[in-house]
Amino acid sequence: MNKTDRLLRPENLDFLRACFDTTEIDKGRIYWKERPRNHFQSALAQINFNRRYPGTLVGKKPCLKMPHIILGVTHPDLGPVRIMLHRLIWLLKYEEVPPKLIDHINRIPFDNRPVNLRAATHSENMENRMQSKDCSSYGSYEKTEDGNYSVSFFSSEGGAAFNFRFPTELLAVTSLNFLSFLFDNRYHVSNHRANA
Picture: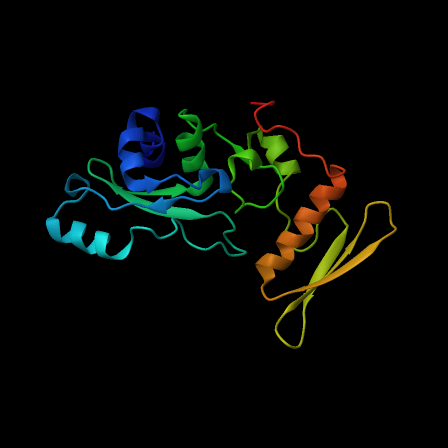
């Protein structure tokens, strides 16, 4: 069992709750708390952390190459551990070991609201994954001369065409995936726990 799996267990909830403020967990966000001395190897490390991080949003900003939000936390016994935010949110919300695969229902891998997370098989996860250049033949995007990204999306019925502009490639790809999700599912999102 790797360090991440060892940390993401119900017996570590007290430690994790001492690290993270979960008041906005239903919005898919958690924040750093001021952490106690026993979380650190030295008093100086604790002071430096507590001067800089309490109240800040947890996790690095997503990018196209890594659209999932990842964070690092140091555990007194395990040392530094890297965690995907959606797996941590699952444990903090449901107080159970996260399933092996967690699918982001709306195909947005940085939308970590618990209602957007579901246990999935490998094939379910692959069928609902975020595409890179286009999404289910519904649309495409391209970089424009001004450095933005132009998105063209066609409804699955072949009727309506939608055109958008975004400042980043990640937002362009995300828009295609989310629109594709809406049209594939006819605007209906099922309960994430129903298949768990």
